[in-house]
Length: 185
Image (cartoon, rainbow, N blue to C red; front, side):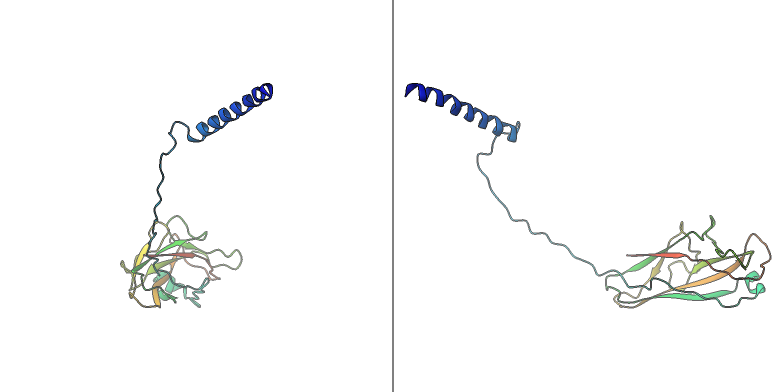
């Protein structure tokens, strides 16, 4: 029996040392806690209703434009109508982006055949913008005032066709897709 106990105590002693070793690994240099507590954390936040619905695609058709109207920078009034707007909107900032924009912010014709040449376009802010008449570009985002608390909003713009590089406009089609990014404040 002594031999049995002697042989079986050694493995038990080794197991307890192994347990201490694992326990020491789990706590590292930090001593094991002598007591524990718990607390309840309550997370609170205010979720703002500050976006609107906007049509994903709009066509701003300027119709047939006389070459002299391009030279004279005839303005065309356009707008974006927003619906289901949250009541927490204070203003909307609009930025122009897209492949049809040159390094001056002018919008170039993207049509390859039967295109009008010597013509570029630009979008200017309308009368509800903070800086009315400012040219909208990727580097020059513009802030629009809104009717606070209303569920519909209108962003007003002016579009102008201009002479490109002082060249006389030639007849043809003009088409330029531009993305307007809206940021709600």
